[in-house]
Amino acid sequence: MLKNTLVAQDPTYSLLRLAEAITCWRAVGVITGSAATAMLLVTLGGLLASASWLFTAVFGLLALVVMVAGVNGAGICLTDMVHGRPFRNLPSYVLAGLFTLHRLIGANIVIFLAYLGLLLTIALVLFVCKLPGLGPVMLVVAIPLAVLAVSTALIGLYVATFLVIPAIWDGEKVFHALSITWTVTRRHPFAVMVKMIAGLLLAGLFAGLLFAVLFAASFVVGGMAIPILGAGMSLDFGMLMGGGGRRLAGAAAGMGIGYALVYAAAASVVFLLPLMVGVLTWGEYSQKVDLSAIRESADASLKQVNHKVNEMKERGQAVGSSVETAVMPKPQPEPVPAAEIPCPKCGEAVQIGDRFCGSCGNPMV
Image (tube, rainbow, N blue to C red):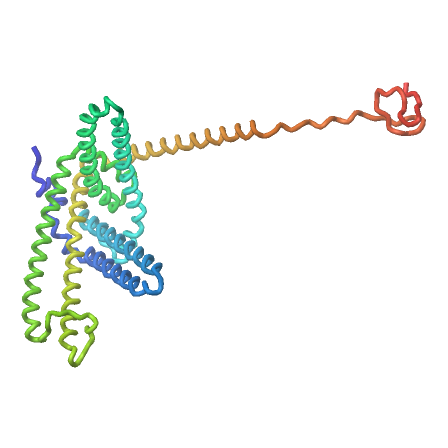
């Protein structure tokens, strides 16, 4: 029987703490600041697109890096808050988020390769099912198993994403995070899924309430601004700084930009809620496994893999050396010149064993 996951046994990781994410001003500052910087970089890239498309690509890539680093930094900040650790300053969270990018990329590559391996296996099975006669019979069994395998893999990707990333935010190495995630999902699969689903539903409820309040406030402010400013609702952003006869259009543009900033900031803040779900889920279920034993096992497995890879390299080098030795021609030994002695009559050199001198014919015996 599943226990109530809305109120966990340890209140430290209860989903009722979800709303604390939008009250953590450091996390809010990191993610909104990174989002604003990313938007500025994209805008600059668009302005420079007339000069070269390379500027757009470079600034777009920088915007993506800044945004992901900001999300990581906000996740690390939420991790510190949940575990009761001292907060850092905002630049430290941004740098920490930037320096964890390689771990996140590595973990995602491993997860993607595992999923790709499953797809290749299914493709191989389907290729075998092309055999005439026996193939259609095999498909009756292969198709349900393939659908079940892919469904399980998709659920595994969902769970792994919500556990591996918070594990890396908590300071775990890539293979440690993957090993711990595998152990947790293998021992508590349904409990983890229920907590994640319940957390996302609760996050959606909080987000809906927040945007409902913002919509209501927007109508109130707009209802007051329109009769006071006399601004029409036709927006012209080029007239934002306009004056004189164009004042009304400029006011409408200013209202539009102001509303856009409000809802962009709200969207960034709401994005913290699913991050908090992952942090709380990781925090609870990482306490239910032996982290030290899992780390040691992962290190031992990694050392074993490295040892096998080194052995394969050495064998390959040995085979290459033997082939090179077999292909290379053997060196021919140079003949050793025979010893010589001078002729007693003419002094010319005569080889030992000759009976007569080759120059004067003097007998050497």
